[in-house]
Image (cartoon, rainbow, N blue to C red; front, side, top):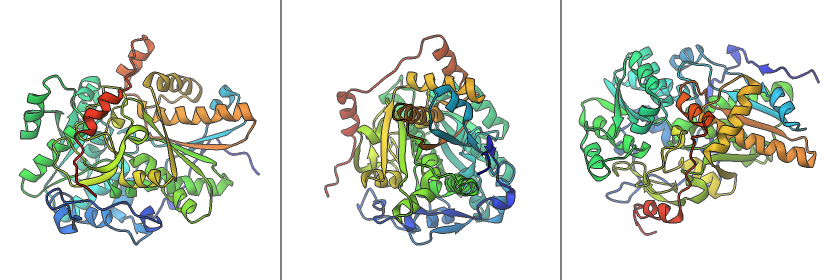
Length: 456
């Protein structure tokens, strides 16, 4: 076997021609969206006033294992894909572990993260449908940045509602979005009725993704020929992110790499779902026995401490009811620095796979996350995003177990993006001012109280 290179690059011809739909092979599907008024499964016609038609069709597709990527999307992907699969030789040496560590690096684009994979697809479909404008929310700013880039490329106006605490922590994210032509509003804002209501009820709030989603939805539904687009959670977003897993799978096959464990950070679930989907398909079919691990912040522990229930996807209770692991749509997370993981719920696909035992989950305090982020930056030369650093923490934890046992496991994780817009977070960490917040059971109960009681 030839020595595995530090970075494994695929050619453009090796890029995926189709996305991977893991629902087509799942033994049990996630439960359907419910209409909050009738409690009946939502139909495609009921979803199309909110989302683009093609995205609704993808959301509800449970039959096709592979869904072709349009040439108009592939043309965009070629500007920054394929992304490398990296052998973390220096991290292995630093840890003194017999484990082999790999990471799929999604930070090689201006948005700094994997979010561009779905942004390009969603804006492409909006343009094809003749949609005149789009709205969205963003937490840490990666999704808003990616969507701004895609909207500029395809020529579609965009309004972004950015979680207020993130907009304060990351002012340059706002500048980036505005440079690409987006209008950015700190959420909760006075632009919408739901924003004004939330400000009245919680005057000092730093906001949440659930709140920003409500504002983006209200804006989309009040404008003519406007649609809402979402950067995580929903099935079609995970579908688009499977370019990550498919490229990873191809790279692994070229060099005979067989992962024993695949690790990702989890907030809404899009990057983790996209990374693991094709490998999970193999696991469900009995072709591998890979362990899949999601790492979430201890401050917003939807998988490890949440409830599997039907809940609203937003604070304003405007979305369909979604069965997922949730802390309650009224849960207001602490202002931790991993803004992209500050969401009260989890992807229905990830939730179902976790509930059925295909995935395990762990939570970690942010100070521990930054400990390993600092180590990784020094030995691998990449400053990781706080969100991505949760996955690094999980990989380091596994590698140190191998050091104790002598096992030579192959560990693969998703490095979803860079931390160059996260200087405030690193400044707080370096100065010793970082504070960990773990919600008490009483805190969580307040969020659980907002989960609707819909019986069986």
